[in-house]
Amino acid sequence: MNREALKGHLDLLILSVLADGPLHGYAVIDELRTRSSEVFDLAEGTVYPVLHRLEVAGYLSSEWGAVSGRRRRSYRLTRAGSARLEQQRASWQLFSASVNTVLRRKPWPSSA
Amino acid sequence: MNREALKGHLDLLILSVLADGPLHGYAVIDELRTRSSEVFDLAEGTVYPVLHRLEVAGYLSSEWGAVSGRRRRSYRLTRAGSARLEQQRASWQLFSASVNTVLRRKPWPSSA
DNA sequence: ACTCGACACCTAGCGTTACTAGGCGTAGCG
DNA sequence: CGCTACGCCTAGTAACGCTAGGTGTCGAGT
Image 1 (cartoon, protein in one colour):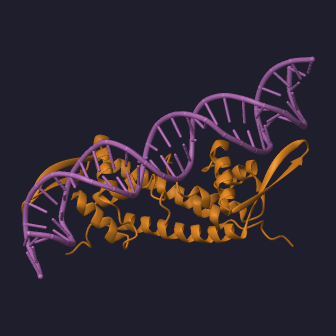
Image 2 (cartoon, each protein chain N blue to C red):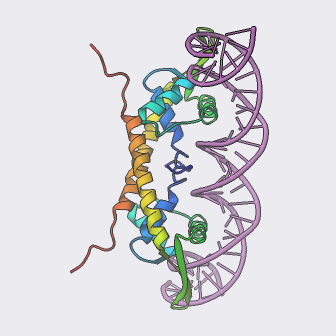
Image 3 (tube, helix red, strand yellow):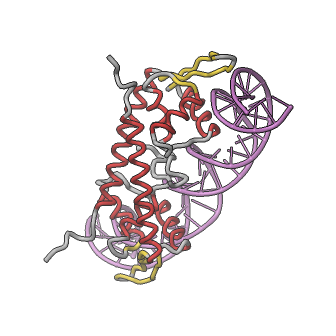
């Protein structure tokens, strides 16, 4: 898998797993790995900055907590975050459909 | 459409249109725009450097020519380029399928 | 004659992004 | 007591697509 393939699509993935309920950062990574059958195995240094960026943008809100001595920051989608998710979803569908169309097109329609 | 969405996928698109026969740079841009129904409307400054990079990498070969006073550089896929295309195609399929899987997953299976 | 747009090529520099590589600290297992 | 998993963080890097500028030809319009 291309090293740059995720660029511009990571937000979508993260918003997407958070749409199913709040998660803390480490759990987001787990979810993405599990759901994608290990295809998306992201480093913490990849995910945390995204979470911060999305929170600053107003798409997520966070809350500190602790479970058995370990502190956690739990993230949840804001209303704006849900809207953003829908928009990114649509954007992805247009993008992937367009790529597929370009890929499918064969030479010319084989005249004769 | 996300500004970064193309990252890591542009090579695939360009190799793809060139798989159907040699084209010069400007024509590559036209092809992409047409095939994608205007979705991929790339600047020349985006495409030319990619063509150069792909040639240096050995995936394309180029040839200068002229049509009615205008000089053109025509690019064609090399054998390595075809292999690269197939690999990128597979890569794209894995990637897009994985994204779709992550997107589709709903909360939990709605127990009773 | 002159201008303007389409055609056709090019490159230096920029902004965004995901990633690397390091750091901090807790819990639990061998 | 070390190691691994858990759980958080950030500074710096590399790569990419894009912006913004450049060169030049041709044809149509005025």
